[in-house]
Length: 500
Image (cartoon, rainbow, N blue to C red; front, side, top):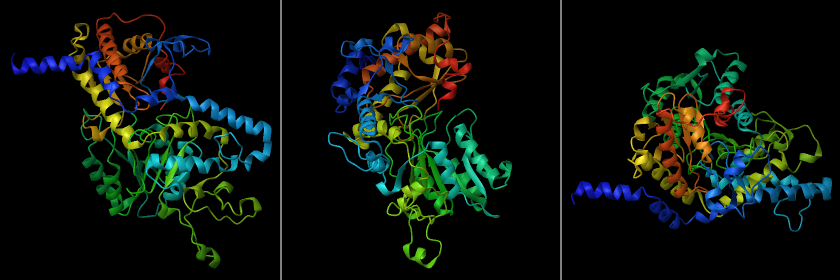
């Protein structure tokens, strides 16, 4: 047997389902899957909210959910935590704000946000004082820019990525207009230097910063780009910005709970995120923000002397000093740290599913999750690019291209796959018919994100086989007919077009 024949044979053997089972058997985090409710195939297709009995459902009846980059699965603990909160409200009323309750996993209402911040801090690489759980991503972004975007006659520009998620673009443009500046002049967009490549080299990001450094007041970039899945080099870009005297903030919607972050050590000025994706806290869940400790200090001496004692911000009573909060005075003194940037009291009910999810994160660590994620996504990529052992899928690799960076250090869990023109509808319908959940970005991209908390190597293997066959069916005009897929309904008034 020649060396090439032996290598080809080994490659095909590694693509078998048995190889996937072996990878799952050696996975130290496999037990965490049981912490989540995985919809069955019938659950997804049924037009009512009645659910399949998961104790009776077999492994083959479960859907393959590779969409945690849009909405994470529900932790089993979430319902219990919500029920506990509702029980405390029902039986204690206003006393629930201050009294701890035996048998409850939740703190009193008044402390629930600070407990959530303590549990969130290890996920983002920060101290608890640098984290606040509050509002939504877009609202938090406006609150941060109200404090950190301080344009002058010389420095007034904001640099952001040209393909930023629309809400970020809207927020930046509106803040510029709020300061009576012209976005055409004050908003600098970083575009890929090669129009044939969707990702942006870090060297190009740094070059754009250098070009506009003398007139730039702030930079806002995504930790992980939502469309391509590219993971930007946060510490390098942050250092580069600071060396030129520029404040920099990060949108971590697709990074938090996905990649290992060290926001404090990287000297990030501020960051914002949502918690409904990899943090599995439910649709539209409460958001979070990070403010580096150097920006959250409160100078007690300056307060006594009547001088500026803390960073300018949009203030609200929940950000005020806890010792004087209920004295109802009108002199605002913020809580030191990120909590001092809070405005109104956060919804305790909304924090309950986040706490449930963070309990699961506490069963492991971000380094361990990232290590498994790297293996899962590498396995996904290898299978997508390999000639398949099953002849029914031969030739499919000519019908799509992975546009996410192949360097594992430059991506999170997600791979974005660009299909040949005209294939998206048929492929999505076929995947959904088989109980596989991914999302799409028109006109031709699907995003696939195996989450290390609950996805398996066998699921990745099964997805790739069905995906390749679906591509060939769509190309040959053999796709399923009938109603448009749930995802593609975004072409009407609902669907993926409305989901980040």
